[in-house]
Length: 597
Image (tube, rainbow, N blue to C red):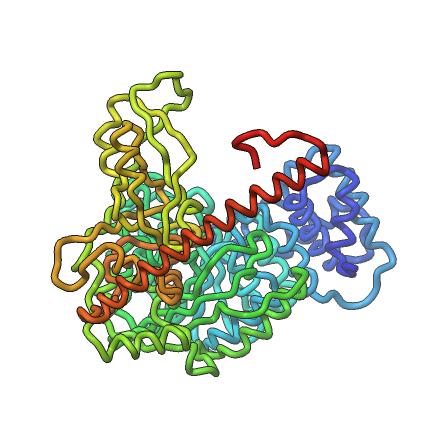
């Protein structure tokens, strides 16, 4: 049960219907003011007294905003009554205030108003140990989600936090009360405007509000995109790298969603190229559950040192056993992160030094999973090193054209029809007859042709359930003749064998790609913040063995045997269904209806 004073105040606000993020801010202001004079019972007098004590350093100082709010809060009469009632909850409290506990509770309640996800205090302590920043050097923490980490770092270092108004005011007042060397600015690190207004807008004529810090730690808002300017549409986490990383004299560190690490848009690839070729880079994947608000969000630490790169260090920090409850899970994560102090893993198998030219060949993909392989995959890679191999794109074309747009409300007799193949239709190395019918306008004909699967095509799932592989049978040819072609969904790619002297048939290629370790390899090359996706370039660069003629001949015989076994199984399943229907019919005295099962 929560024992904090902030929790006590917040429960009082709950009865007045105040939102959690608002009540967290008001509770923080009441506690900070009451701490100045515990004998005063009039809240207005407490606010006035605290305002007179504050000495802001500049207009951008969060204490300036705090002083202005205390002098003119803009609260309604009803809100004042709620605050006065909350103050009474502190009557009789004696002893010192644990500002660590109070801030943890305040931040936990205010997460919905922070514009993004923030770390809990326990995980902020763990990340502090992972980064292991040196003492006696200047540190900046960027954006409100880094508030808990800024507080943790300021226990024994001088830290500047750039945060939104409400979070900034509470942080500044609590730091003042706890005698923390924490300075809080309301300015946007990008251009110096006051947050949150400057986030998402590119102002080339505005400079960041600081020249440099020794160490910059950033947790940019997740899921935001630039709204205007040359960078319009770019994810903000990528843009802020490009804008700020060279203002760190020694290290620049950011926690970002995994999407930034592998997306193949030109702008993001160029940013990754720039940072990886100009700085010594370490990327460490983080476990799911780092953020209570989004347990499945995949994130990583990107750490840049101001040194010429020779290679990139990739660290797998993700794979751990998950606890049952959120708190238990948080404790497990914190204990797990103890194995990565100073951004180095105790287990060498979790780390891999990746040459810069290998990063370039992968379009500057920075996903650790792509380079830190499991023991099984390492065994496969060693086996491939001992024989002739080829990249998949050398023997096949890999296509993922833009999907046709189906009609929202299909007519009884639409101009065009098609059956859409979904990943669930791909199983056991085969593509089943699709059941989802789509209708299209006549102007979608070119797009339909671009995503139509042909007999002998191999389909690979590249989104969500990565690595399902299956070959299209002759049914696709008959469907095309009947003017109801099989088209692939956006979650699939078509691998179409090209005439070559290395892989003699689509069936042999399909047999190679259906090996279980291929799926593991494709999964390791995929990424995404919430839903995983596999870049088509990664599929094209997949290294596969070149079988000898003798191996191909043996494989043809085995494939023939496998097809015979499939037929036997299908016959047994049909017989089983018939016997079960007969049993049910006799027990229920209901005649068997043809076609039902």
